[in-house]
Amino acid sequence: MLLLAWIVVFTDPQSLATPLVYGGVTLVVLVTAVAFLVRWEASTKQWAVLLPIIDIFAIIAVREGQPTLGSGLFLVFPVMWLARNFGVLFAAGGVALSTVLLWGAWLTRAEADAAAAFPTLLLLPITLAFIATTSYISARRERSQRVLLRQQASMVESAFDRARVQERLLEVTLDSVEFGVVAFDREGQVSLVNEAHRRSLVEYGSPRTAIMYREMYQADRKTPYPVHNRPFARAVAGQSFENLTVWVGSPDGEQAALSVTSRQLVGPDGERDGGILVLRDVTAELAAISARDSLIGSVSHELRTPLTSIIGYLDLAIDDPNLSDETRRMIGISYENSERLLVLVTDLLLAASDRDSHLPLQFQSTDIGALVAHAIDAARLGAEERSIRIVSEIGPDATASADPVRMRQVVDNLLSNAIKYNRSHGEIRVAVHSTEEAVQVSVTDTGFGIAEADRAQLFDRFFRTESARASAAIGSGLGLSVSRDIVRQHAGDLTVDSEVGVGSTFALTIPREAPAAEPLDQEH
Ligand code: ADP
Image (tube, rainbow, N blue to C red; front, side):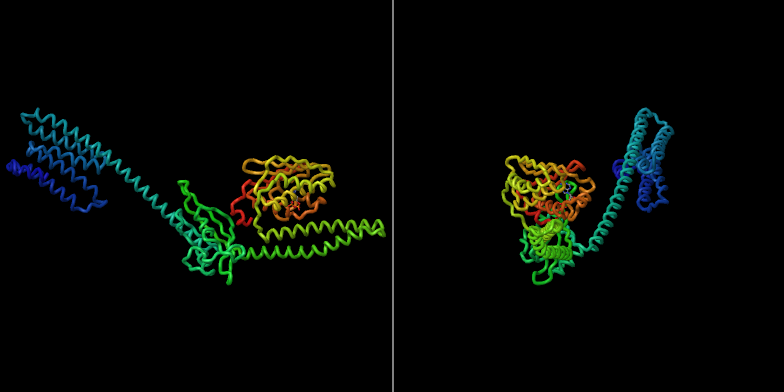
């Protein structure tokens, strides 16, 4: 409007002197000043609607004062103002008011060149109506987008709040647990070390700010762990492992056994996204296990010597020709029972030494077919005593990388169970099959089978089924547990399938290739 006034000053200074132009421009300037200067608040906002209305009057006045200036176009601004800010009623009202004033002024003027002004009088209201509509619609869309944005912002805000609370909760929880936790991101940078781990670091000679212990030893407590093979290095390299036992602290001072578990995290993109290490102090547990095993070991060892002597003398005594039949029968029973006792004691000794030694397996290329054939030959005598037939089906090329002594122990155990828990005149089928990757040995008997409920505990130490305990079969419940440990150390598995009253099948599968070092680290 000021620009227009400026142009008028140069082109037609006369017309500025007309009260309509002069008054109109002044009014517009005043309204603009009011719009800027007043501090609009919620309570006064509705009065702002007067400003564009006054503008409409002012613009019409300028237009009437000097029609050639074309200031009627300025009506667009108040109409837009009304449509954007004051709703549909004021939008329509603005257009209507402008139209009425335009037409009213024209009618009162009633000039001769009315026909010339007619298109403007028709087009201007249509243009205003169009502008009012689009302004109104776009303002409404913006408003709803603003509302949506605000809602989303508040949702994000509350999600952040929740995440912060969870993070805090996690921190407090991790700081109050007794085991160490170390988390790292995908670059291997440590993102969290909990309080228990820091305390343990200090206790075993490392600074509180360190991530891992300065010294770390293998099972013998004095051979240092190679740096690249330490749990943290392995975890950062992407390996998952469970219950890896390491010793920390100086061999001359106090040491602790830690059981370390590594878990890798996967990000939403499916990529590896760091991981965590959990370090549990198992010193007391290891001490208790080794105390128990050494007790079992020494007791059974001490029992074996006198027992062997008793069996030897009973064996001699039974051959004495001066014995009455009754005495011979009684000595026979004592002899049998002493032998049973010897089997149990030997089993216990074996289990204790198994636990204690954690022997690394001696892997070598082993013909599992031949190994099974020898085991069958050895078992045949015992089977014949109970009139049990052993049928074997040994496939070709069943060579695998295995520890032959330990494997033979497993097969012997399966065969002896198949004889012990079979019926007289029963049958045992032994099959050896091999594929490109693995070798499988299965032992099927026609015994009394194992109930579904017992199968879950079958591989637990000292577990024997009710029927086994009731039968005459001697056993300690250790054989299967030891066997499965051995098979798992070969990275294989030992499984059972059974039907009560029909028989059972025990199947062991081992890969042809020797497993990597990890399974040796595993506690179970
Ligand atoms: P043991 O034979 O010394 O008792 P094992 O660990 O070898 O110990 O077996 C555990 C238990 O599993 C046995 O006591 C028996 O109840 C059951 N079992 C094992 N093999 C068989 C089988 N072939 N048929 C039925 N039961 C079996």
